Structure formats: C-alpha cells, structure tokens
Image 1 (cartoon, chains in turn purple, blue):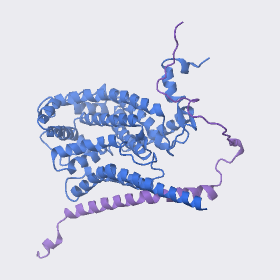
Image 2: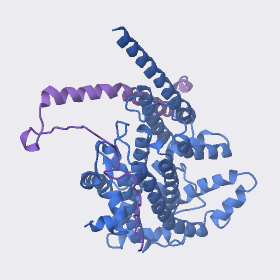
Image 3: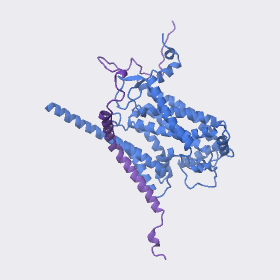
Image 4: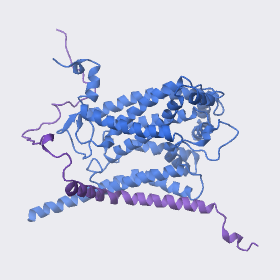
Length: 92
Length: 391
C-alpha cells in the first residue's frame, strides 16, 4: 500500500499542539450586553495619564538632550560663519 | 473531509503561514511593520517593472529617459514618484521593524534575526545602485564617493574598484551593470524574506509582554489579516500624501542636474536613510577605518543576540534599558542630522561623539543595564522573600 505522509511547510506549532491547559474556566460577556466605551472619565483618562507618566521620564530626557545638542550645534555653526564684530570695532 | 487549503500541497503553505497560523493575541501595532515591508517590496517591484519598460541605462539617455517617463508615459510621473518615495517608506518601515526587534527582544530568534540583517544589507545595496540610475549629479557623485571606499582595502582595493566600475571611473559600464543589479537584487530579497519567515514561523511571533503565549493564541485570519490591512491603509495614506503633495521633500535638488564628472557638487551626501552610516563613516579620519566603522554600524546587529544579558526578553519591565533605547533612537537621529551637514566644526566633534555612543550603547550600555537589572530583581526578590518569612 502506498505510504501517505504529511508535509509541514513552515509551522512546527499548530493549534492543538501548543500548550497543555487544564481546569481553565473563562467567563465573558456578550458584546451586546456591555457598554462599548465604558468609564471614560473614571478609568480611561486616569489610565492614559498613568501610562504616559510611566514612559515620559524614560523618553523625554534623551529627546531633550538630543534637541539641545541639535540646537547648540546649529547655532554654533551659524555663529562660526559670521564675521566677528570685535575685528571691525576700530574701523571708520 | 479535510478542506482543500489544508490538504493541497501548495495551498497548505499559504494556509499555515497566513490563515491558520497561531498568533499571540496581544501583538501591537509594532508588529505591523513586517507585513508593511512585504507590501513595500511588492510595490517597489511592480512600479520598478513599469519604470524598467521605459528606462534606458546608457549614460547618454538615462537622465532624459527618466524625464520622458515623467512627462510622456501615461501616469509615468505617478509611477516614478511612488517608486522614489516608496524607497523612503521602505526604510522607514525597516528601521521601525528593527527598533521593534531590539526593544522586544525578537533577536533571541537568532536565525530569523540574522536573516533579517542579511535582508537589510540586500535592501541597502538595492537602494544604493537604484539611486545611481537617474544619472543626476548626486547619483554620479554619490556612486563615485561610496565605490571609491573599496580602494581602501589593502593590496587589492584598486583592482576591486575598477572591476566594479567596469573601467577607470563611474561611467556607462557602471550604470548598465547597476541597472542589472537593481533588477536582480529584489529577487534575492524575496528569497531571503521566505527564509526569514521560515525561521519566524518555527517559533512563532513574540509579544509585547515577553512571556510564552502558547496558552493564548488566535488564528492569524481574520484578526491579523484585517489588522494588517488597516496598517496598509495608513501606509497608503502617508505614501500618497507625499507622492501627490510633496514628492521632492526627501530628495536632493542636485539630482535635477544631469551628471557632470567635471563639476563636483559642494555637498555630496546620500539619501536620508543612509545619513547615519555616512556620519559614522566620516567620523573616522582614516579611510579604511571609516569603511570598517561603516560596515560595523550595520553588522553590529548580528552580535546583539550574544550581548543579551537580561533575564527578561524585552524592555517592557527594564527601566534602564528603556532609557538607553531612547538614547539610541536620539543618537541615530543626531547621526542622521550630522550626516547631512558639511564636515565643519562643531559637526565634526558631535559626529564623533555620536558615533562612539552608537557603538558604546550596543557593546556596553545594553549588556550592562541587563546585568544591573538582574541584580535589582535578585535583591527585590530576596527582600520580599525575607519579608514574607518574617511576617
């Protein structure tokens, strides 16, 4: 009898073969039984502020430093291209 | 009865990579850039094919053939603009994709990561030879500057450069072969992309939390098909805005002048996506040293997996690493700015410090932060265990 075999192209991982889970019970509400955008002022806004505070002080300092370097470098280069007023102080 | 998409020999491949592929439930927008890169590649190949129908690669007609495409060919102006700006978007997506890889520890899938670095090199080479094709001033002089770097190789450098040029300078022979390379390399990119995906699908995508997601995966279709389509829509919006309203924003005005080997432009510089590497190249006063630094700036990505010291996969719970990542992004932005500036003070010293910082971040700061954060975790665990014992 000819042998049949399965070819797995890319995927070693398949549904049914990922993880062994036992005694897991999940509960959920139907989307028709809940608000779509609940607690905007009591939960959403404070949470957004919490997430912003959490990342701001890790991103803002390097960005501020980078901007300061850019600003100083540009101004310094511009100044270096200008004539120095002291060189012409005693001209008529 | 098994459905045909699961049993047919070739449809199976499509099914297992884009339909029934288990994907983590929580992958964010940062995971969209992979599919966006495929879109970019397809777009560049399609627009490039139509451009190739009208472009001629001889130095006497190359520039005017591009003018002919823009003025006479039906929608030639649109195809050309999409192709030129599409290249920029390709690099935007690449750098964001790499940034995601660094931040979320995707490099721990070493094979997929290494295939990705090879892809980056291939795309850079394709873009470099592609920029020469319009045969404008910057096309010619950019090609001259960069190809001349190879002459720094001891003993054989000069011979290699003349072999590459097909003569004693960048000339017609160079242009015709660069056109051939620009047509050929994308097929290598397609092949390498398949290898990249092969290794990715071996272990599956990681996720923003950095823990094993095998217990909570969902089907790629329809969730991530639709999420990727939304990403495509945003991409199309930004690309078409640039193409239709500010098509020359990212270009150099020098390239509107036909190439003239007797007139050197005052400021020779590559396109924006190469400027950071150009700054690193120019920061070393020695020619060969600069070439090494240029290569090292890309190849350093290959050793990032070895330099991973943290117990966590990604930076989500690593405050020090997050600050250094911010510093790296800012440093690359500064290098990009410096690469476009003339070699004058104070740009020289800023470029040198930023180049040093670039390598220092990868080689010292990131591994050190991982080690420090491990120590912090250890001490926290010990103290909370001790507290639990006492209480």
